[in-house]
Image 1 (cartoon, chains in turn brown, orange):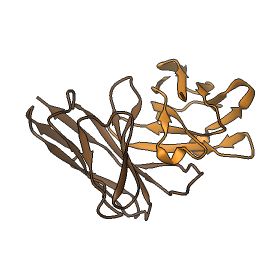
Image 2 (cartoon, chains in turn orange, yellow):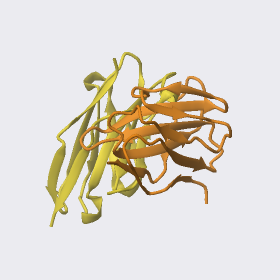
Image 3 (spheres, helix red, strand yellow):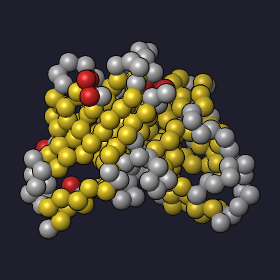
Image 4 (cartoon, helix red, strand yellow):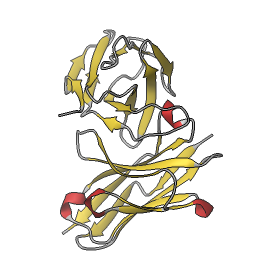
Length: 115
Length: 115
């Protein structure tokens, strides 16, 4: 079955530690996205990538970093510089075609708790 | 700047009653519009989308939405609510040519179904 996997489902870290969230897709999609979800805030875009070895900052990129070495993978690192990292993190992917907007397919999410 | 407004953070309806979830957008270019549903601690699932063409869009689980350019609205409806419809619903849009850079989401509406 094609889809997006995120691991782990729940993640706990101490303040000051960097943590990397995994996102893998087998949909053969070019574009991948990371969103952060907080209660009552909707989803906010952290980073996105439209092709391998290239990525762009979203609306709230500060304190986060990404890499896109393979088409299938788009890991997100939450650094110690992120002031409020506790949140639900969602990865998504979509077809990419300039000038078009396609629906995004979402993974099941990772709930990160930093204490 | 583009934005999405969902009226009502919580909507409560009786089982069998009409469901109406409101979404208004602000954009300087024709938008691509989406409705997603999220069940607790899960990712988002696409309900329906509007890109171009017919303004009344039918989606999964009996939901539909109508794009009204003059009102900048894309309200979601379902004639008869079912208990399984209880979830969080998000309206989102991508600007044509810019949607590939990520979607802009509303803050969500929590749908409560009363027995």
